Length: 182
Ligand code: IMP
Ligand code: MG
Image (cartoon, rainbow, N blue to C red; front, side, top):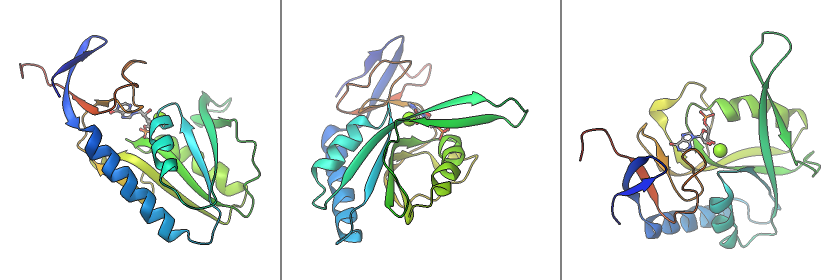
């Protein structure tokens, strides 16, 4: 793996395809054990989670369902800040065991704002499975049950994650190169 240019910035190799695949499989096996005999419904948040969700799903041996949703945020009419709405959640989640699949938790804001909406619909349980977590970037704490990698607060791209729309197709994860490092 070498330094690459994505759009207008340089990125260096951070997590290899092999490292990612190994961890994703491990995580799936853990979920297989934890949910034995149950029928969890995975809710994967687009766009970033599509690759992680696909690979995770291949290793699940349970009777599983998945629904892909998009989150759109807009300013409420009152000055209460952002309201998050979900597009595409067409499955009834009442009484279901939900596992949210997300690419990365950075500040935690997205999930922090979205979770109450799911809880409102009274699922039996909600757990969160993420590929990446930036613990030092936390502003809104979120309980995470399944996480592949904890990473430093540096911008990353690849394996579904984008930089300005670019780089989602990379099989590996690359980290933004600091200025003056090369
Ligand atoms: P949060 O709401 O701050 O937790 O951020 C969540 C969203 O920000 C993620 O779903 C990503 O789409 C995006 N994001 C955060 N950090 C990165 C990164 O390092 N690379 C690419 N996207 C990121
Ligand atoms: Mg995302």
